[in-house]
Length: 420
Image (cartoon, rainbow, N blue to C red; front, top):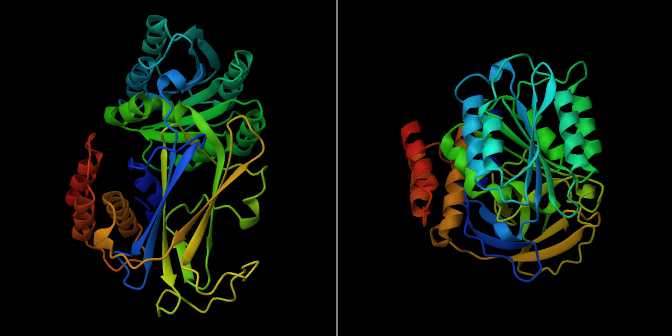
């Protein structure tokens, strides 16, 4: 596997962390932690966690879901269309009477195989899924147009209007290009229809196209390669995956130059915004679903520490250097977000104070997130870590395993042991 295919931020965020529920009307809570870095004696590690408000199924507005399913010949193998059909059965169980489901398929041609049907009529929906079969070449563009047309015709005002695209990523858009498809999705975003992309049996190689489409379509994407993964995405996390509580969530960190001489964000290589985009409400950014957590890790090198990683950096571009020299603030976290149907962003700020906590004393969640980050950086052959030993990953993960009701953390530890 090419090392660039390893997305450390996705590895960290695959797992749930025990962040508190937000208070009051806020759509998410913010948790921060700072301690000595476990893999670099010159540095400190900062964890920033968001948690979206849990909205129970009863609190989620009615859904208008249009499934856009790739049934081209390449979908025939067992980990593609057969797995997709099983996964959709898990999802159908979650539907309520007020939810509507339509199914559009595309291969050589696009067609409607299930007109909008109430979630109470599960038998009809399951029969339409069961009757799907693969064959033909793929022309995704017509399918996407038809799916948006149906989603818009049956739009539920104040509801959860969403297209769920399921494919192995091997779609082309007829005569036009990827760019034409992106432009179409950006245009349709204005209609209030969100887009979720589910990848089946694709390994990690064609994901950039799906990630781009999901990002452009105010949505999210996931890969499903086992039934366990299907249950996670479409069963236990179904409403979080499908219901956005805040859109265009942007995170900006401002470091105190009296405390921090250098910093780096771990992962997120292709999701960085320019500083000036933070306040620009026309710039699209990530979405946060009900109950979802997002974790970011920053490594910082304090002022006064000699480090091989710090070159001569020209003056940092702080707009105002009136920070108090003896302030104990390391950084300020700024979040901007919009309500799902809003166009004006709101701002939340949180400061992080310095401390000298050894890493052994941090929360189990912080240890666990660090273990996953370390493994990802080992796979990426990162120059910023002092160990390539799997044993160091395992020690951190075991110290941070904590409560593991679904067994995902134990599974990760087993995976690293087998990788040794």
